[in-house]
Image (cartoon, rainbow, N blue to C red; front, side, top):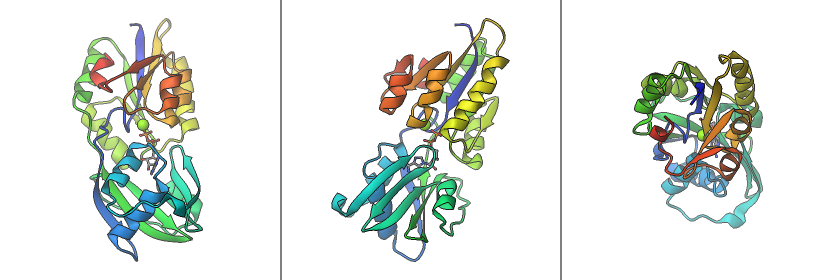
Length: 245
Ligand code: ADP
Ligand code: MG
């Protein structure tokens, strides 16, 4: 009740679990082949992006083709597929993989890049929608006396800024890795007026450290990762942002 700053994650928290593949832009292969690479690499992930790619892939999923798989919070997924490294994620992950990638100007949503071996395989555009009630929830928080609403997202600036503007958030921080989300919360904590608290709302593995550090951590219970739910003080069972105010 004494909250003055509400910081929120974007993907899965303010935007819907209603992800769908909006466009497939392969380079040097078919749509199906690109989706197949991504779907195999993502087959153990419960990230909303992974779920949408798996839903869009119509071919066979043969997990015996996979070797080691690792999910990289805030970056994507890296896997060995047929003995070759496959990376599925954002530009930072492509950079790390050394793939000759390029951005996509689609404004429809989050762009997921894919590399295979040392080459760039193309990208998949995942349309994301703001949750109904998210805008009203942000306005209601302000009406209740919250001074600042702040978005902390791992997504790129173009997407993060568009969502922040649509929802009327005071501040938007984009392109953040889990430890960078934590640093921003560490900066925000001393800025709150005396006797008030900072609330953080999130859903992902990457949000768990911040959920623990905030005065009050709120996790999305339905879409949320186990780590986020475990680290939170409050769990919203129906993921409805209107429950925050
Ligand atoms: P947010 O902080 O907005 O909830 P995340 O930190 O979960 O977003 O993800 C940040 C970015 O990292 C995504 O926009 C995406 O580019 C990439 N990413 C994270 N996990 C995955 C995944 N499983 N597959 C592909 N990309 C991913
Ligand atoms: Mg999230």
